[in-house]
Image (tube, rainbow, N blue to C red; front, side, top):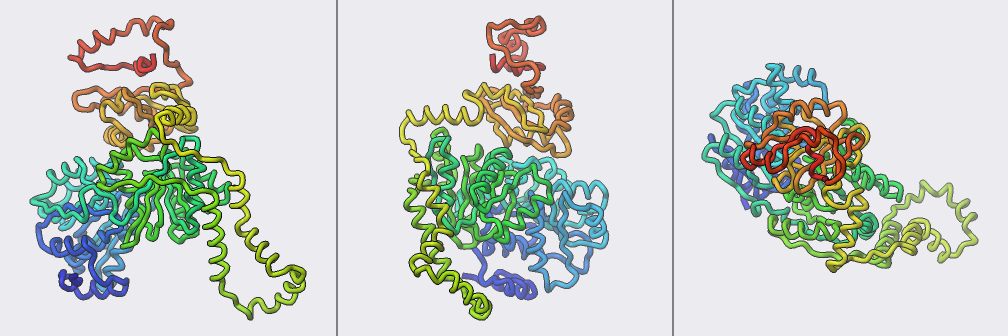
Length: 596
């Protein structure tokens, strides 16, 4: 195993990282650091979060900076404010013995004036979210003419979040003679496009295998009926008394509902989603990072870029549509040499997606059997006993109170006292599991049919085409788009398309997908702008139609029912297809034909 000195890291940086506890380089650092210390060496590095990648690019970037030159010489882009602050903090620690080197984090949601003042004083390294950096570029305060190193950290996340155009603009605004490094957990088509457009003779460094899950993560799924998902979640959480986990949900509404249920049931849990203000999100994350919160229930978007050590578990409350999202979820645990567990609680309709994920990440899932109430109660009882044994007693502190305590409890035997202590600490588990509902894990196709019905009842819909007239969440407007699963359009593609045509990054709420079309929700205040900007949207040669799908307006009509005259004037499907050379075109309100 090599040392940091053998990799070429300078003495003042080695001194700083030694104080931080760095002893030997991790595999990704051994591969990347010597290569990046050269000139004109572009890199794509595929590595999971938690493999030491910040130091892999951070140490050589800092070493190549000239502290005497106050111009910006390196920019590091990250997808979220949380990750931006984490990276900037790490770089400042690495550079503590480099006099005159300034690192600045710039991101949305904080005062741009203070960031402008800092940039005008001179900053050699900028760590930024793409949107805020472009804003500062347009204001003329972020001058990138002398940038020699550009790093895209979690590049796949940034592209998934719709920052493609922003990244294109930033890379086009820095000198052509530079080092460019893309760090990504997965290698997708957009990553390859960026590489071909902006990298020169790049080297691909893979730590592990392409698109695989974290090496130290076990993947387990529990197959249950849709109605049993929450009771199954409780069993999983109760079975691991010292669990410290993120529970991923698919929507903001589901996230808040699960968090509220857990809190009502006495768990130390909090929600993290897009409806929270930035201040609320910061407070929630601070409590979670300091272990004051044990369970964080989050959406994929809210949890992107989170860098939290010591997670014991990631729990998927249902599988994500996109395999890359699963890779990022599971990569939050099993970090820094520790082992972690990714648990998925799924129903029969999601079982096929497990096989797809297995093929992509190259790892087998273990099908788990939910722990029985007796097993759970036994583990919780031992937890109480272990905690009692580990309590440190300060005799001097409690001595004044002992005479009264002994007098008060003198009538109890030792056995009675132990029983009361255990009942106080452990009784609620016994009460719950004494009458807990039985969870039957399905195994047959009949179970799959029953589960499909239950899932449809829970979500307020049966078949895909019935999603049209569902009411939007309060404060949101529900819109129709004439692209669906058959067009290979899923949640990520819809988000990217909206971000491409509507500037300002509109918040997108619930997304419902069907084979032929989709529905998505945007804030009511933004609905008019989205409809206007998307009126000229194209996918290839195909016209994109976005329309109001609010069920309080006209309801979809059934085939054979009476229509008004304006509907009768519409061209037939066959004529429309012929007029568009076989490509179906849609006009206003034509989304209703999907439900006729």
